[in-house]
Every structure is written in structure tokens, then in C-alpha cells.
Image 1 (cartoon, rainbow over the protein chains, first blue to last red):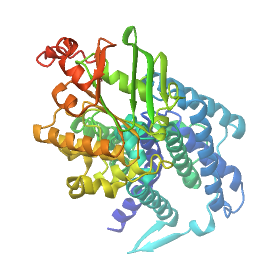
Image 2: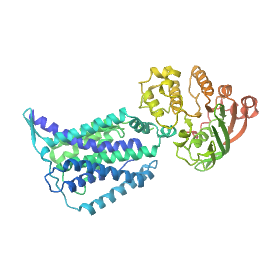
Image 3: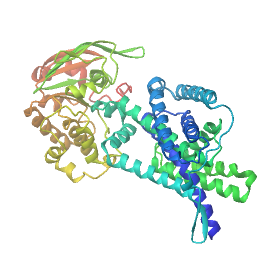
Image 4: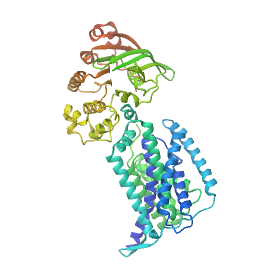
Amino acid sequence: MARLLIELIGTLSAASTLFVVATGLTLVFGAMRVINLSHGSFYMYGAFIVSTLVGTSTGARYWWAIAVAALAVALLGTLLDLTVVRFTVNRDPLTQLLATFAVFLILADLGQHIWGTGFRAVPLASTLSGRITIASATFPIFDLFVIGVAAVVGIGLWLLLGHSVIGWRIRAAVDDPEVLQAGGVNLRRLQTGVFTLGAFLAGLGGAVIAPQIVVAPGIDESIIVSAFLVAVIGGLGSVLGTAVGALIIALAETVGALVAPTWASTFTYIAVILVLALRPWGLFGVAER
Amino acid sequence: MKLEIKELHTYYGASHILQGVSLSISSGEVVVLLGRNGAGKTTLLRSSVGLTKANSGSVLVDGAELRGSPVHRAPRLGVIFVPSGRRTFESLTVWENLQLAATSCPRRTGSWNPERVFEVFPKLAQLAKRRAGVLSGGEQQMLKIGRALVANPEILLLDEPTEGLAPVVVGELGDWINLLRQERLGILLAEQNALFSLEHADRGYILEKGRISLQGSAEEVWVSQELQSALGIAARDTNDSQGEEK
């Protein structure tokens, strides 16, 4: 029983990071119809910036480093939107993929130039480094923290999208961008905002998880694959779908690791294939018109 | 306020859709633009607000050039395009649709707000918390007009407002148009339904193959040869949908 609980918390923690990163991807796709292949770069930059700010200190700087990293990545997102992405909106998917893939490659090289090719470990803040025992099961406090961050992001997005005029605009941009503009909304500015928010979420995900992962070149690539799987099975454009998709992927990974460790990633793809066979547009997705 | 369209030319790829169209409409008048499917009515309305890029010509709002501006400038100047069909924000509730529209042109002021829309369209008040996607065609038409009104426009460009509406709802639409005329709004109706639209219009234009073939008072248009040639056949001609109007 305790064993199950431990696995459950571990799975939730893994799903949390996936959710925070993938939800940025799905928001950008929903409101802009842009498939952003450089989304994983934002995650990597978030992690690298935290590693630089925390350095080899005790990890006490971790708290403000998260905030600085997420905001810096958001700013990078704004710049990319204004310089590259704006020209790919309303273009065919191939153009979007090529343009954002180019950005991904450039950011990867730039990252190696700044941070080198080695790997880095980020020390944990002492308040997060312990373990906690609940109902005879002991978990890392850090896992609970990561779950908490995802919960805050989820509630924040729910409030934004469901209960604010800006959120209604974002949803209206998904439903009918032409009518939104014809009603007086500056769609381009809204899209810049959404892209910035997407970058912020990916940066936040990378920044928060940095102490638990090996921060090294290449994590941009691995996260974008997982994030895409999550967003696609959840239904591109749906935040709720992303949450469920993240749980499915994380659960498949956990089950795979327990049952057949050498085949772990196979379980992930079996889950993806099953979902898409039953619902080609994803769990909460809507067919393109 | 006066909206003047001068010598507008619009192409879709190689096809020359609008071939030098000129038209004007002022606050307080109802003007009808008649033409069959594919004549270019929708293209003209879309080109006026910039949703479709016109290649040459002018769109003037009280003398200020609108052509080449971003789409959101037209509504901020008081010109709102209401597209045909089910074009509500379907995942938002009726109330959210109206509230969103009311805040989209913050500098425009006037007597219209979501509460007043609910007074004029009590049906919408009952549906306030429903998602717009589940409304009937007539209810969506009400919502589309209500959404345009809360931005307090001076000129409305209505594309095929009677399309797909039950006859009783078409009658109500006429009442709404009369009410808005009394409020000094200018309304441009792009229609195939000549009987309905000429009954409510002050003036009319007939658009044929991208050119204005006739303009005049509603009576002049009603009795004209051009109306017979432009629409008399089109009303019964159903194999004419070339898909250009989307």
C-alpha cells in the first residue's frame, strides 16, 4: 500500500512537469495555430538559467532563481514572437515547422556557447531536500513541491481562461480569430501575449525541475517529444486535456518502469497509439473545420 | 459618419472578384447590396474592414483611409462587420460573448451594453449562461448583432442576415433593423433576399460579377430590369455555389 502511494506521488510529480511544459505548447497552438518546435528550448533555458543563478551554493537562491529564469525565458519568447513567429502565423504547417525548428537549432547552439556541453547538477534548497512520511509512506518533499507548482499553474490558467476577459479573448481566438479582430481586438498583440505565456510556462517547468534532472544540452529535445505526446493525446488546444494527457504519459512510464524496465518507453507509445486510435483528435480535442 | 468605398479592386489569386466597386453609406440609413452567390458581396464587406486585402481603391471612414489598416481599426472607428453563418465564439457563454465584445473597443461610448442587449433581446437573457455553440440559428443571429451593438458602432455591415432563418425570425430581424435605424445607425445589408431587404432599405445597389450594375432608391431597384437579371434567376438557381463567398 505504501509502495503504491509512493509510486503514485512519483507519477504525479512527473506528470506535473509535463503538464506545465505541454500546456504552454497547447495554448500557443490553440490561439495561434502555430506548432512550436522550439518550445523545448524554453524549458532547457529555464533549467540552465537556474543552474547559473544557483551555482554551487546551498540552493538557497533557488527560490528567486525560478522567478528570474521563468521571466527571462518569457522575455525570450516575446522576442522570438516579434522576430520570427509572427511571420509563420497563418502560414502552412511546413513553414511553421521549418521556422521553429531553425529557432530550436539556433537556441541549442547558443545554449552550448553560453553554458558549454557538459552537464550540471543544481543543489536543492534545504527546505525542499528532506523527506516526509504520510501514512507510513515516505516521499521526497520536492515531489510534493513540483505537484504544488503544477496545481498553482492549473488553477491560475483555469481562472485566466474561464474568468477573465483576457482569457475569453484567448478562447475566442481559438474559436474564431477573424470575428475577434472584426470586433476590435488586436489579435497580433494577443498572440504575442499568448506566445510569451507559453514560453513562461516552459521556462517555469525547466526552472522548477532543474534540481531533479541532469541539466545538459539535449534536454530540449527530450522534453519536446514528451510534451508533444501529452498535448496530442490530450487534444491540442485543450488545457484540461493536457492535464489528463500528462497523467496518462507519466502513468505509462511508471507502469513500464515497474513491469519491463528495458521496454519502458514502449508503454508510453502504446498508450499514445491506444488513445489516438480511439480519439484521433485527442481526448479533449475538436476536429479541425 | 460616412463610409465611402471608392474603386475597390480585390483579387483571389488570379480571379478578379471586385472590379472597381464604389459605394457609400451614412449613419441613419439602411442600404442594401443585392447580388447572387459569387457576385462578390461577401468579398466587398470583408475588403471594407480588411479581412480580405483589397489590391487597390479606397475605404474611407469620414475621410480617413482604412485600406491597409489592421482589421481591428475598423470597429474602433465605428464600422463593424457581422459575418454570415454560425460565427459566435462557441466555447464561450452568451454573456461572455457580449462582455468580451463590450470590452474590445474600450474608447467607444454609447448607450449599448450587455444589459441593454438583454432588454432588446429577452431571449438572449434567458440563454445568458449557455454556450453560444448550442444556440439555434436565430439565437445566434441575435447574439451576433448584440455582440456588434455593445461596441457602439455607427455603421453595421451585415452579411446575409436572413440566411437560414425561419420566416418568423426574418420578420423580427426587420423590427431590429427599424429600431437600429431610429438610433441613427447605418446598416449595409448584403442580401439575396430582395423582398425582405428592399422593404427595409432606403437605397440599394446591385452587384453583378464584381461590378455595381445599378444603384438607386429602394423603389428604383425594386422595379429595375437589373434586379430581374441579377436575382430573378438566382433565387431559383441552386447550382451556382462556386464557394467563392467563404
